[in-house]
Amino acid sequence: MWADWRTRNRLPFAHGLGVEVEARDLSFGYRLDPKLRQDTLAAGVVYSWRRFPLFQPYAKFLPGRGSMDFRAIAPGVDHATRDLLIWGGGIEYSGWRKFRIRGDYEYQFWIHFLQEHHQHALNPQGFTVGVSYALDLGRRWKR
Image (cartoon, rainbow, N blue to C red; front, side, top):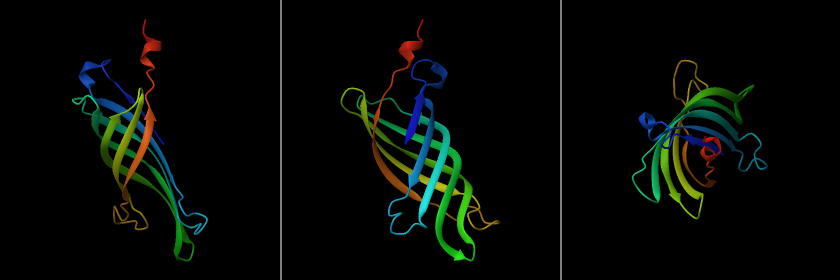
């Protein structure tokens, strides 16, 4: 799940910049192996290139927090909660009316995951596809 707020034409000096909040719950197969689960919550900046009428590429950087359950690798070591950094990007396609289709790639850095002196010991990455609906809240706030 994600939510974006973009400046559009309201702030000319920040054209293309926006804010994104993202939450993920990766519990696929949780019934088969309840010790495999990952949740993340992150918020940061997104930059969009608005040069194409139907396609809109973007890049994002989101610091956040992640929690993971896994099979025990040592007695009592089966969970970790860490800070993380997310780099990514993708493309949005303007579909029917205010609906958009979004293809997203992201690469995560879980800082100090299970190793207190080695950064980036876990780096999950992947692609997602989703559908969004564009709300135009700006009309309501115009004077």
